[in-house]
Amino acid sequence: MLGATGLVGSTILELLATRDFPVAELVLLASERSAGKEVEWNGEALTVRAVSEDSIQGLDLVLSSAGGSVSAEWTPKLVAAGATVVDNTSYWRMHDDVPLVVSEVNPDALAGHNGIIANPNCSTMQMVVALKPLYDAAGIERLVISTYQAVSGTGKAAIDELRAEARAVVGGYDVPAPQVYPHQIAFNALAQAGSFPEGDDHTDEERKLINETRKILGDPGIRVSATCVRVPVETGHSEAVNVETREPLEPERARELLAAAPGVTVIDDPAAGRYPMAIDAAGRDDVFVGRIRRDPGNDRALDIWVVSDNLRKGAATNTVQLGELLIERGLLNRG
Ligand SMILES: NC(=O)c1ccc[n+]([C@@H]2O[C@H](COP(=O)([O-])OP(=O)(O)OC[C@H]3O[C@@H](n4cnc5c(N)ncnc54)[C@H](OP(=O)(O)O)[C@@H]3O)[C@@H](O)[C@H]2O)c1
Image 1 (cartoon, helix red, strand yellow):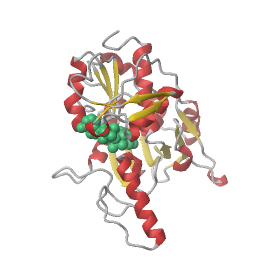
Image 2 (cartoon, protein in one colour):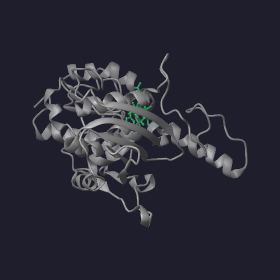
Image 3 (cartoon, protein in one colour):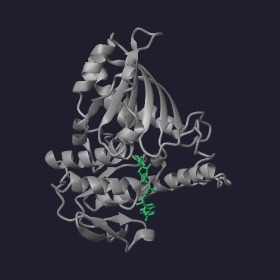
Image 4 (cartoon, protein in one colour):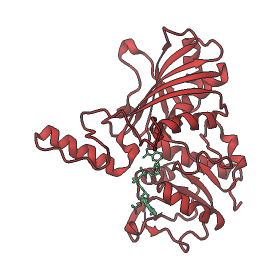
């Protein structure tokens, strides 16, 4: 594992143990800062090593979550050393020769890999799991998406920032200057998840939702409008998605399709106050869907509410599922 000490990395470690992943030897790699640290895994104390030409030798499968620039540098070296890499960063996702795979949506794309498999962005991942059964039944013409994204999507430092600011507000003392986000996140909502690439009026997070959705569903014709908002939730992204289908699709039929879809749990009884919530999704692997209803302004569109743990299905769970599929299907570089 590369990035073993991070938020995604520690969630992957937990899943490798609980899912009984077939591990002969587990090697934990991170930066020089963590070299020598001990991490408890499955009753063993494992020592973290710094990623280096030496420490990357002899690995069959690398589950990687150490940031884009680390991935740009080390993934080709890992592949040259014989490993198959499942990468969590955005760096490889839109490369033509790198499959971008969600285990319930396009697992067959794994077969075409050249050593690197990209794990999608968290907000795209949970949305496409919910969209796949609707897409298969009625096609998708257009999506209008608003996200409400948790701070853990930005890493450990962002959780610390939210907690420190919240303590200051509640305690009535000065809120520390933000370091991770451009503004205070506690008791606020920022109309900016990600950053604005130069000359673009969309954030990189919004562009990921647009481009990755088309690549995973294999349909470049889908029109996508996205607004990504950061909210003071610790874990669990929520999304309001308006889905315009190509063929008519009744909300009742959509509810049935979603209830039968792998990886999806429908919670949809608004009169009883039941719909998916981030605090319930946190720590679970499923994508939760509710508020399934007709868009009153468009008889070919539905509105749905999609919630999932961004560290689980949005990152670590899918990474581990892809590792399992690569092994089951005999698709590792080193057989
Ligand atoms: N959080 C999410 O919901 C989410 C979802 C999908 C994808 N991702 C992506 O996954 C990646 C990691 O996210 P995270 O939330 O786990 O971040 P994080 O908590 O900040 O952890 C970063 C990890 O990368 C390691 N690292 C940093 N610089 C390194 C270097 N130069 N060489 C080797 N290792 C290095 C860190 O090791 P040290 O402890 O040694 O610094 C740590 O293990 C990011 O690219 C992120 O965009 C995150």
